Image (cartoon, rainbow, N blue to C red; front, top):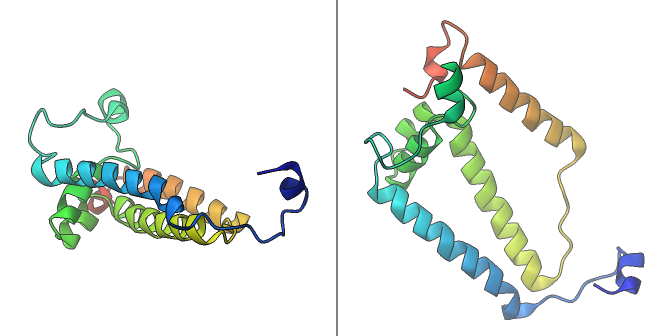
Length: 146
């Protein structure tokens, strides 16, 4: 981006066309390899994945605990089990996929990427912290990744 483009952020940017798909294609390939590993290696079996350091140190569940098991269930199309293991991981994967699609489209077409309003970001952070706290409250075991 040149200095004049930076000075005029509302200018229409030229899209990269098919060249804009190089980075998304590489990221898609890496994500496909990760999904294949998740499909093939069960996180419930010992040795395939490292344990959660926060859980080992404190005995408490972090917001990410159960994510590997949730994504493993998701790539096996078992949505109910995925939601039981970590509902935030399922929602985050949907959001990441949608954001990736939007980013890829904008790379090709040159349309500017609009970020979420600050209130949305605040709600997401508050939700993550609330999920973190609630899954460790006695009586809320349905939020634990077991």
